[in-house]
Length: 404
Image 1: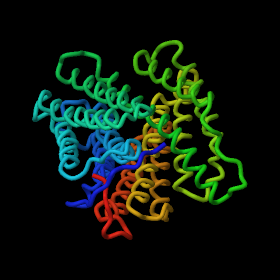
Image 2 (image 1 turned 60 degrees about the vertical axis):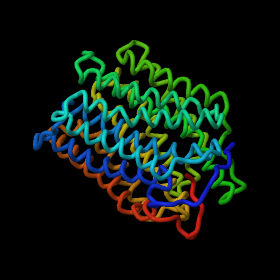
Image 3 (image 1 turned 90 degrees about the vertical axis):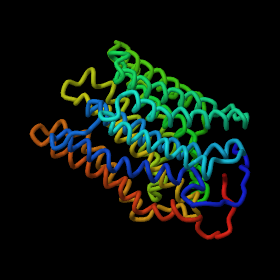
Image 4 (image 1 turned 120 degrees about the vertical axis):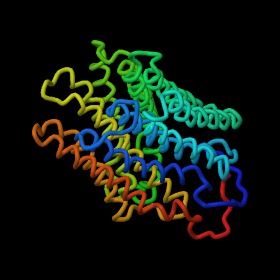
């Protein structure tokens, strides 16, 4: 059950009136910029002034840069509804945003700043954000959402593992840190998606088709799917080559797909804001199935599962949530127009092209560039279409009260 958040008249720029506003906008812009940079580096057309290898920087910035911004925007908006406490706004929110920006600049310029300065600047944001979320959930006695504190703690530890190797303190923690970061984002999608997707679908069906069957309620199958997902991700992070790993991945993928089928996604095909959430969860199930099949199907590219889970599940889920939250919390109708539907089509195209690119042999770099262009276009179009609602006062209520 949601609590009733406290409100008071807002002052200052509208973009700092709620956490989703700056973090969704800046996260989308960074996603649109960072991928073309990575493609240029991969093609040998440029070098980046970072201490990290190009591949590690690419993963790090998608997880701890773009991914962390999306998580921050969502949680800073959702937690006040869960706890009834005053949301972060104004100066404190601006400080958190500046920490995130400093981390992105530090990681890009770490070759000039040095590993120590870069680590300090980059780790400041996840540490501060962890402190903010912990304070709100504990002070609001919102124990149901305490696992989110654990998830943010894992994101901090994952980021730290990457920096420890860059600092020369460890020799082999970089890859594990990036895997832990990806796994944490995937678990958040599995956990939070399992709440909002059937709930939003049920509410929409009750209005549009009240006589139709509704999504299945949370039960033992859902608990089993979440448990299998958590176990499969744990093994993938700590022992990806373990004999049990592919079987756990297949079991988790099958359970996630069965879970999704019970949510009546096909009945929402007329509303892109809803079916895109189901599509994101489908990418999650497919990614785990591909991760398991990778050990048995020789022609399957080893990166196929990874990009189904990242470009597919994470990319689609973040855009689905960013568009829906922005429309709903800025007073716009919860309807996806042609531009928003195009965003969803572009991110889907990007994920598909990234999956099949390794199969194209001589055309690999071409398809990789096309995938990057589609990804960049999806997030760039989000920034263009949503910059106005994200930076202007809530529509239809000039004298509204805003959360702090």
